[in-house]
Structures are given as C-alpha cells and as structure tokens.
Image (spheres, rainbow, N blue to C red):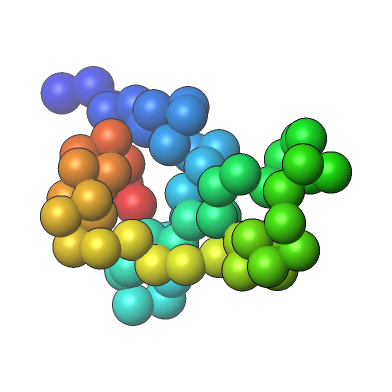
Length: 65
C-alpha cells in the first residue's frame, strides 16, 4: 500500500505539540495592520491550540502527524 500524502496547506499552517494537540497561528496579522487596532494586534500575537472539533478535521489531512 502506498504512503499517504500530507496536505501541503496543512503542513504550512499547523504544527503538532508534544502531546498531540494542534497549534496554529492567530489570523489577521499578515498585512493591512495600520487599519487594525492596537488591542487586536496585541491579542493576535503568538499561537493557540485548536478546539477538539477542528483538531479532528485537521488530523484527517495529517496521516502521520
């Protein structure tokens, strides 16, 4: 049986933690930042862990992750 491929988009956007949870970057932080408030930009720093429902969807596209 051939190896399963990981979706390229998932590979670029998500990473796994040591405990198997999925970590993702906060959205709305790439461009047009002059129109966005300081509070929004501050809260969009860093990463967060996906909820369980979304993790199940993303893990379908990460067969070995």
